[in-house]
Length: 325
Image (cartoon, rainbow, N blue to C red; front, side):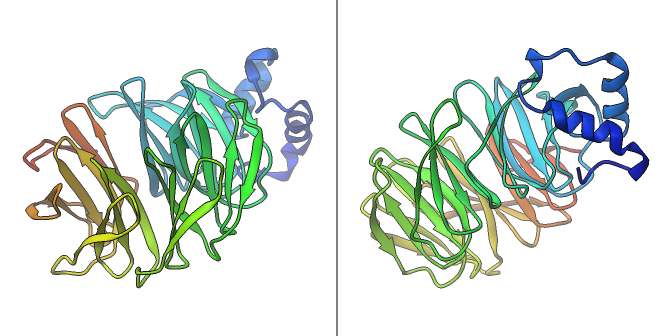
């Protein structure tokens, strides 16, 4: 495994792999000595360990599960945080970057550059999904099914048991973002296209108005917002018609969007965070991160943001930074 240190530990590594301890660990007894060795040397077991540190790499995604923020990072781990921004647990299992997170069937599902999707609770990994052999770059839920997007341009539909139901093709580059509406699924890709899909996985429309790679999608009331590398945001009606194009003055690549009450928050390449009303009118600028803002999520009365250095921040409704960590 890529995080294992030293070839002299190969016998232990092989034993761990052979017994598949990263799968449904609760059904197996792990000797305490093996567990301690595995954690000490970073073997991925799909386990949850107490840890109060931060990520060792860029934070790529955020989600909220049972009132707590979960983060995924280029360091290959997930972490959970309390409401004060204190890290509580570290989750080991992926052998590549953790690129996306979503909540489904009372668990956190994570997608990685190692090509796997893993399912987590506070106790650790409870399931690993098979059926994809490429980077998993986006996750969302739509009408009681999980959907994933991949680096090869495909979408996959998954059952609650983690079984791949179908594979859908259409995009010719990374599927970087997914969003679910009442009528179906939206996907945004680095091929400069947005596609609309029905619940059966049939593409019903291809939007070609984007002039650059599509980075993020967000459902805002009865509209869908998108952002792209050109620095613009667009607001679409549910039929896929563009209602408004928004071009911030600095034209920075907008990496992430978050819906907070009656506001939309955007995070950009230059580390800046801006607040917009639901009609796309600029309301205010907030403070900024030192690096690009990679992810944002709403938690109660606050917006949490994360950056490419592994830093995080909490913001109130007025755009005041409450805490950076």
